[in-house]
Length: 321
Length: 245
Picture 1 (cartoon, rainbow over the protein chains, first blue to last red):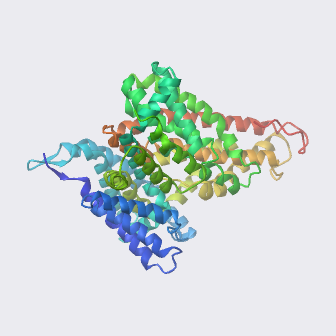
Picture 2 (tube, rainbow over the protein chains, first blue to last red; picture 1 turned 60 degrees about the vertical axis):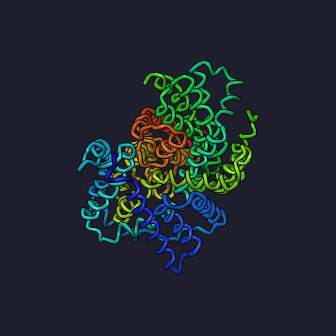
């Protein structure tokens, strides 16, 4: 059955917004990396708008250029803040808790949308493809909440676009990292990396025991995250290599439970690694602590107990639900 | 079986992250190395990256579509409002200040709202509040009053725990919101290997760990308060340092 709404329309909208951000940068003569940053966001915008119609090789080249622009430090953010602090404090006084409503509206609309949109039929067509309905509802929820929020706080029409573009630059290139890591996961899958890791794990560990598989996966996530400083990167490797083949395929565990708790086991690793400098080393300097590992030491007991708790919860739930 | 040559991608990533190379570049090189050793021609690897990147656009989609809303709310004082709410609480002890901040941060991010970070909130707001509470705690036990400065060791301990409160709240609330990178990454990973896993299930199963993280933060906050209380009894300020944990 054909569906009326697909993600493609939202991709185009999102791409147009990213292109708008690129144009704003290109017009900003004070931007520290004007052309590199504009090129980065423009190419990402094109990938969003035209992704489906671009030949894969061309899209791949664009992705490589994105990474090279970032590596060559050509993508930077301008030092601009949203208005003065005083005006924001005054606005916070004026609007009070009304400021939180639009943000709360997003999950509410997303939940309603994902349970309804896939079931509504309009003239022989389903309103939204049931397979994409969650992300679709989420995107629509963000748009509706933006419109309601703009009305609620009496902002002018340009504010969401302008401040969204500012925030996009503030988030920066890291916004495409998950997408790229998922692509890497696909390539690993092609090459059979998962199988090789599973084989090694099977040689050293008695993985015929379901409990051992859970321990190997959670510890693997934590240790890999400690080495890489990044739980997202560890996820593709360890889930493809240990989680999927051992917990899901061999022992028939629930993939959602495995992945959710596995990722959070990775975060336990993030709590104790100096490689995650943003979280563990930058605050040491910011808070003028003498011991470089002070934050890690404060977090280590939490990380250790939480990892053990994760293993227990995963073992108790993953084979049961 | 090819032997274990396919694992080269993992080695590339470990080395790449260790030398602090840009993550995007590390991921690309790891993909190329893996593809090449498994016999894919370079052009096919480029095309594969292109196809998979375009297929996974939906991961970034939800994150980007949230930005206009959050950007607008921030201009109109979202962060400042959250700060006002936190500052209005007169929590009695340093540990409770940190626990309150951690749980606000956790709940906010589980709804997709980022309330501050180390630079925006912890240093200017949370640390002064916690230190003021600790001074009250110390003052309450003696007649010395509130103007006495905190012992350095204690002040540093409070600041380290404040940074931890931010990280713990941030990390273990994030996976409950389906528009966050982590949940979408997991979903995208499953799609790339041909499986369908619901976003809601992924987010739902983040809750047990979030609850455990909160309880552990509460335990650490109590430990901090006991550590502060141990400073009340000694007579001199320049006393023997109480064993730090």
